[in-house]
Image 1: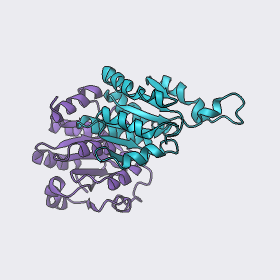
Image 2 (image 1 turned 90 degrees about the horizontal axis):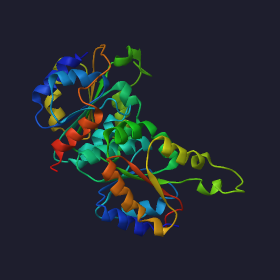
Image 3 (image 1 turned 180 degrees about the vertical axis):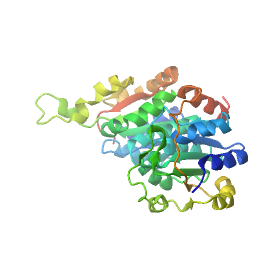
Image 4 (image 1 turned 90 degrees about the vertical axis):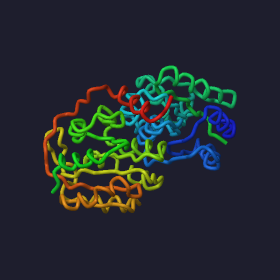
Length: 164
Length: 188
């Protein structure tokens, strides 16, 4: 489990103003904390592709958005990601839930392609990424913001276990 | 039916400090009327994602009116955005849907459902209350001011004549256009 309160604190440290995305089981607790947050606004989109374009507009208007989606939605969002955040050079950090991670372990009864396609796609789309396996990795969020700012390009942090 | 070029000319003549996001068949005609850093041609970008992009701008810039001029084909590519716009209403967002039932820049192929879709009904069904369909120049002239001052999110559906447009090619690459817009909006 990842401590949702610690993730929220990391987002506060980075001055995040808006969370844009679609909830999933892994991010459920994080969304619940964020909905209660007095300064950070959560904006739900109908589909994940919208999250990148909406967040790009927010950034160009002076806000500090963060995209929060699951890997399944990340695949759907391909053109939205490519055509807005990537092409526009937006230093956008995204937290992406890693559905199916455990199904890649040896002996798992079935493999979830949402997991097996995920990291190869991140690499193909030229997205730098790190993963949070436990609370000790939550500092990766800070590193991702620095990387995004340095490159003026989107950067991903993967949410491996569920938030709680 | 409306003449797209005449409508754009009237809109440009009244425009002052509003952000104007344009898409496929409007981008180049608008560029002939305006070269403001507050213009953003949403081309070489993500198909169907201009309205959600404009919503982000409108939320971040609540004191400034943001226009998005979308085609009917572009609107169809991401209909869920109408729901997103309704569930996070931005009072300063004006969306225009130019409807003529064709993809103008790819050779006037019909868009899905051309001549059967009721965009006003779709917008209202998505939860957007302030929606107008405009079919004549007289109606357009009567509603022009409302484009700038009406309570958003508001949608105007312009029933326009069929036309052909070349593939839009803005002067600047999209990255430069984006950062020009940010510079105009945000004191850094």
